[in-house]
Length: 429
Ligand code: SDX
Image (cartoon, rainbow, N blue to C red; front, side, top):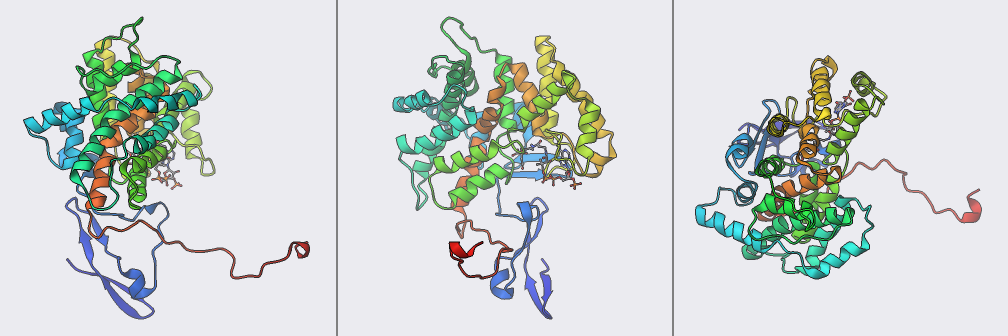
C-alpha cells in the first residue's frame, strides 16, 4: 500500500496508508506531531477515524449496515435481540448451549437491587426517563461494584455485560411506571427478553396486560435495528469515557446522556412533534421544507440527514416496513404515517436535499412504530438506548482489548489571548 507524502516547509514526510476491509482508506498520522510539529483540525471528527473496529460496518453510499459482517436485514428476519447482542459483543453467533446459557443469565439478572428502588422516590414524576436511566445505570456501579479497571477480566466483563443488558430493561420499565404513578411490576422468569420489558411496563393487577406476539416481534426488530452503528456520538462518548479506565456502567451512563440529544437519539420525539404540528395545521409540509432549506435558519427536518448515509438509511426502510406491517395486522390507522410518507416523498423530490444526500434516517419512522406498538412518547429514546446497549458494550470491550490502549485526549487550536498581566480590580475601569 503506497505511502501518503506530505510536503511541509520544503521537506517531504511519508505517512502509511491504512486500509479497512470495508474499503476505507486512511492516512495514519499517529506520529504527525512528533515528526512535523503539526496537528490536524477536524470539527466534529467528520474526516477522522478514532479507532479500528470489527464490530459494525456502514456503507453510506450503498446504504448497507452489517453487524460482524451479517446484514442487519438478515438478523431482523431470522435472529432475536439477545442473540444479536451476543453476536455484537463476542463476534460470532452463539451455539445452542451458549445461547441457552446467555438467555438464562439474562433472565436471572433481571431484578434490580431493592435498595436502588428507593432512588425512584427521589425523582419527580415529571423526570425525563433518560435522566432516570442514566442515573440508575451509573448507580449499578455502586450496587454491583464487581468490575475491573485494569487488566481485562473476561469473567467479570461477562457478568457486567449480562447485568447491563438485563437490568436496563427493568430500570426503563420502572422509570416509566414511576412517571405514571404506578407500582413496579417485577420481571417474570418465564418471559423472553422483549415480552418481559412489555410486561414490566404495562401489566397491572387490575388491568392485566397480555403480551401480543406481534408487538413482541416488532420490539425485537426495533431493538436489533438500533443495536450498533459504528462510532456515533454516543458510542464515541462511551469509548472516550471508558478510555480513562472508568467502569463499564459509568461509561454507558455517559453514552445514554449523549444519546438524549435531539440531534441524536431524541430526534425520534422531535419527528413526532414535527408531524403533529403539520397534522394540527400549525405548520405544513411546505413550510417545514422551505424553512429547512433557508441558509440562515437553524430549522432541521428531524429524522432526516446523516453523517454517514448519503442515501436511504436501511434502518428507515425496515422501520417503515414494520409500521406498515403492524398497521395492516391490527387494521388500525395512524394519521402521522400518512404525513410522514408525504413529507418523505416531498423531500426526495427536492434537489436541495438530494444534492446534500439528505434522506430519512433511523429516527424518522421509529417513533411512529413505537406509537403503533403503544409505547408512550417519553420512552422512545429509552428504547433506543436499550437497543444500543449491546453495541456500546461491544465497542467498550473492543477498546479495552485494543493495543496500544490509550486514554482519549484530543488536541486543540488555541485562539484566545496571548500572555497578558493580571490587572488589579481598582485598575480595571
Ligand atoms: C442518529 O451517527 C450515527 O450513526 C447516529 C445514529 C445512530 O444510530 O447512532 O444514526 C442515530 O442520531 C440519527 C440522526 C438523528 N438526528 C436527526 O434526525 C436530526 C436532524 N438531522 C441533522 O441535524 C443532521 O443531519 C445530523 C445531525 C443527523 C447530521 O449532521 P451533520 O453530518 O453534521 O450534517 P450537517 O448538520 O453539517 O449538515 C450538512 C448539510 C448542511 O447544509 P449546508 O450548511 O452544508 O448548506 O446538510 C444540511 C445542513 O443544513 N442538513 C439538513 C439536515 N441535515 C443536514 N438540513 C435540513 N434538515 C436536516 N435534517
